[in-house]
Image (cartoon, rainbow over all chains, first blue to last red; front, top):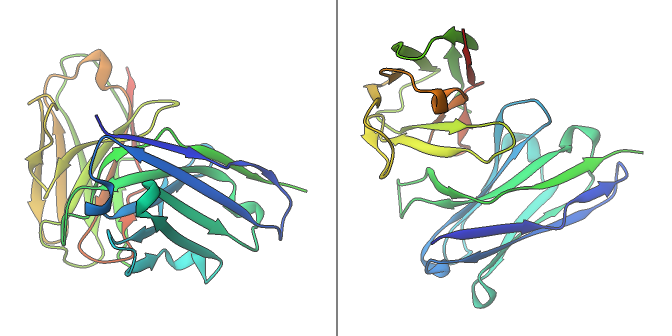
Length: 121
Length: 107
């Protein structure tokens, strides 16, 4: 079955950087786009970014403003999110999610368990 | 970005009730809408995609309808395991966006 396992979360000071990882298994990783979605404590879901199956196409949420970079390594079935210039508003659980299919099938049909990022002085 | 407005933000219902949640988009999105269920401490799970298609394994008491800007999630005969928070998401265009969520609580 599909498994997505996030790692790399933790406590980081404002202005610093953090890199999240997501290890995928149970499906042909290089056939699917992958999203990052986040959820601040007690709040709703917020879409962060998506990367295409070949890594060439990327989109970001409006709030990212050039601070985050999504990437993938298909040889390792892994997804990454490099987060720079972090602020307290970036405190959230970060989920990686599998895109349901190609082209317009953009919803998330599988989710990881999430990794918590806390930005605090 | 396309904004999604969900209503109500919360509701109380009893087992066996029929529950309806609405999601309104700030511009037309065709049928590019999904509904997710999230239980406390867990990741969300997709229930409905393409506005009305039931995800494999999801009970048939869940149904979705709508197109354009107005969408509805209906839960027929609410079960104990259905008490959760529900989110709509548009995938018509990037950036993808979610509604604010609807918490379904036990009356």
